Amino acid sequence: MSTSSGIDEREEGLSLQPKFDASGLVTCVATDAATGEVLMVAHMNEEALRKTVSSGEAWYFSRSRNALWRKGETSGQTQRVVEMRVDCDQDAVWIRVEQQGAACHTGRKSCFYRKVEASEGGGAKLSLVDAERLFDPKTVYRK
Amino acid sequence: MSTSSGIDEREEGLSLQPKFDASGLVTCVATDAATGEVLMVAHMNEEALRKTVSSGEAWYFSRSRNALWRKGETSGQTQRVVEMRVDCDQDAVWIRVEQQGAACHTGRKSCFYRKVEASEGGGAKLSLVDAERLFDPKTVYRK
Image 1 (cartoon, rainbow over the protein chains, first blue to last red):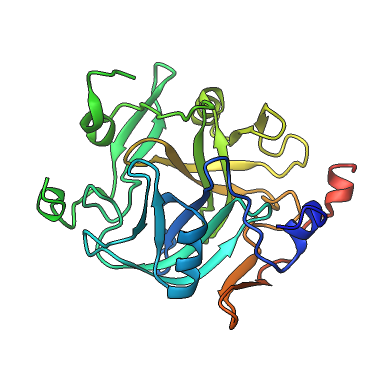
Image 2: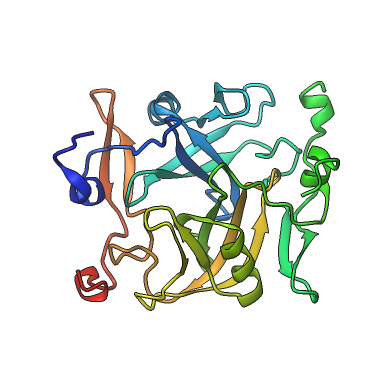
C-alpha cells in the first residue's frame, strides 16, 4: 500500500490495497452464488487472499489454529469462487461461491442456522432455521 | 455468557451468547433482503446489538469514531431489519435488511462496488461494478 495515495486511492482506485488489521487479517464473507445466503464469515491473511485470487478456491486463515487453511482440505467441503469483491476501505472481501456440501463445521450448509428475535422480556431468543446437517462432523473431523 | 456451558451450548443452544472480541465487538454482515447482495460489513458492540434486536433498525459501533451509531442517523440511509441470524460460534451476525437508499458512505448502494480478479502478472486487478452513486457524499455528510 502506498501511504501517499490516502483514502481516495484505496476507496476509488483500481489497485488492491488490503487494509489488514493488527493481526494481518481482512474479514471475508462467503455467500452462496446461487441463493445469496450467507454461508460463513472468516478471515484471510495476505497469503490466503493471494491463493484465493490465483486458484479460484477459497483459502482462509484460522485464528484458532493460527494456520493457513484451504477450505475443505479436511472435510472435502470446498468452495469454488465465482466472484470476489472488495469493500470501500478494503478491510473486507465478499466471495460468491459454489459450496461443495456444507460450509459449517457443524455439518450445516451455512454457519447462520439460528434466527435472533426480540423476546417479550426485552432480551433475545434464538430459533433453529435451515439447520439440518448435511454431514456428521464426528465422522468428517474424526473427533 | 455461562463459562460452564462451553462450545456446545454456544453452538447448539438457543440462548444468545455473543462472543465479543477484545474490543467488545462482533462482526455484522448486512445483506439486501430482496436481492441477497452484501451491502456492508461492520461491527456491533453489546449496546448496538441490543438496540438492533429491540428496535428492528440497524445500529452499529464505529471503530474509527469510537461511537455507537444508528445507521442513517446522518445520511438518512437507514436499514430496517427483516431477519437477524447468528453464526455457529456467535462472533458474527447476519442481518437481512430493507436498505433506504445506499448503504455505503461513498454513495453507492453497496460497499462492495469493485470486483477482484487475477491479473496476468500474478497479482490482482480491480474493476468497478454496480458502482453508480445514489447520493453525493459531499452533500450528505457536508464535507
